[in-house]
Image (cartoon, rainbow, N blue to C red; front, side, top):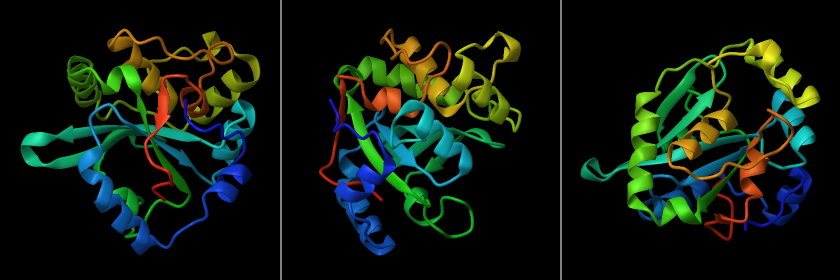
Length: 209
């Protein structure tokens, strides 16, 4: 089980920030250890990030999946983000050009691995195929309100759709490989629920950012 992190303030206290050059250097050191099916957890400063952290009692507000293309020696992050939908970006972009303006991700980033997925190459391949098959699926601005609805009521019927929040995307990936996803509050599921799983292990003694 990963280290309990119920508030962003605790995360900041336990893991002091480093400068961007140091973060990139540290990433380059662990890059070869990343594998398909690993998870990156993000703690952002957006108002929606604050809501998600508050409603889920977690330091984390966003989560994405690592995809590794061994034949090309490339590592990518696949994530569902507002207004862009499901996208795949080089992992190094998190550390130097996450927003497309030449700046790293603004916030904190942790790396974790689910023990069952991390030890099963077949499950990793299925997750890789699932991620690639769903690229560009939308996560539109109206999802703000769907998240608000689900976070306060636990219901989904009034906003039935085929779009994924970041955590719903991870849930669908879990279901593809027959791994039981965590349960939280009705149909509301957050990044923090995955971090709290017994099978989820933090893969570094420091945050990546």
